[in-house]
Image (cartoon, rainbow, N blue to C red):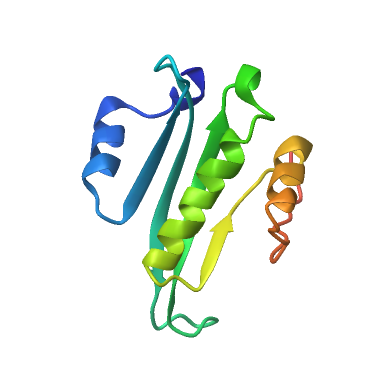
Length: 124
């Protein structure tokens, strides 16, 4: 799957072996990998802004373009939600690029809401 090209074998193996990381793989009926979700649990302790809690962070949900709009992304999201509840997390979080309107629409359809806006000023 070209979307996962930024992971080296070592980095992927490290995630597979880390109990805080969760990886879901979506396969088509014929066994082709058509999507994935990478997520992990973040524990906030003694933080200056937050009360102590655990959060489940979705690093990436990706579905091959030819398989999008078939419920695969929603199922991967639901799997993440179930895992977050199982781990007694208080929130499910993720970051999404502002230009990625399709992803924003998808996450909004999953009932996610905007909590923080991160802004920049380019100095170049």
